[in-house]
Image 1 (cartoon, rainbow over the protein chains, first blue to last red):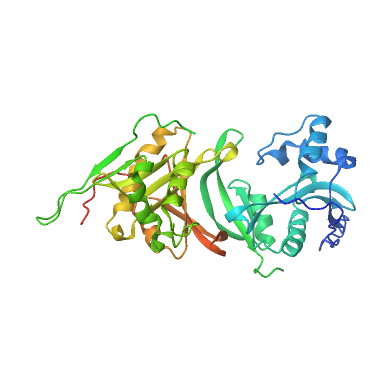
Image 2 (image 1 turned 135 degrees about the vertical axis):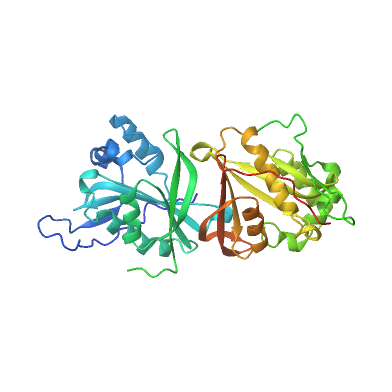
Length: 193
Length: 199
């Protein structure tokens, strides 16, 4: 896996959320996540609604969260906090592959459940799509695997311009059960809105 | 990885469908260094290598290294044999962790044996035994380059489901390729009926 120099702060420009007049969801941005964000981080990682379709179980103590940030987030080649008015409310990441699969990267994300249904995740995905192919010129494909029952997340990717390529039956084991997954992809050559 | 302590041989026999045609026996067995000359026939064939990640082998040394370093330690690798002589290979790769429910099928067959249903029969033989040998396996999948129509036909005839095209999924010989994803589940009904092979 490639490591990104942390000295390059990859800040994506804040974008305004259309149609949000009564609530101020106007500044969604991406930035690196670190230990000082631990309290915000614990909000979504301890939420069972968030972890429902993830391989991990809800976190129960701050120690777990601190270890994750130290051992996984800090070493990750591309991991960002999704921020609302500069406060972390979720995370988004791109995991690269190597060898014959080096042309593709896998997208993953999580958002605090109180922020669902407002277009925030779609905005975050679009921000990633808008920068990852420039940052990683060898990358030709960004893909995402979504549980067949996770309709909300499928909507996010569709709205963000991803192509639904098909259902892969009994593709992975999630919390002890084999799951069917929908494969989505976005190519560097796809036109983005 | 499993110890191959006994010969895992699967056999099928062809039905004689005409007076002129010979009975042919397609079977699977482990491949070893003693098979090197037969191995080199398909490993050095550029028609066979065309849609594979590897380039045609040019020396026996290459072939021996492959058998030593890849074939022998492999969790499931078999020679496809015609009347007990290796004419190709077929293998299943195991995954771990969250991916442990699936295995990836791969195969190669000497080009002079193409178009006779041999690869289809070999795939059916694997399907008939892999889910019993690996009870944790629920899905057998295969990734085929979109231009490789012949191999797509093999999997369709063997009862695999075509799940979709994954665009720019793999780099093959320096170029990014679209692939077709096929799968067969342990719960899918597949008949391992004998087929007539016209040779």
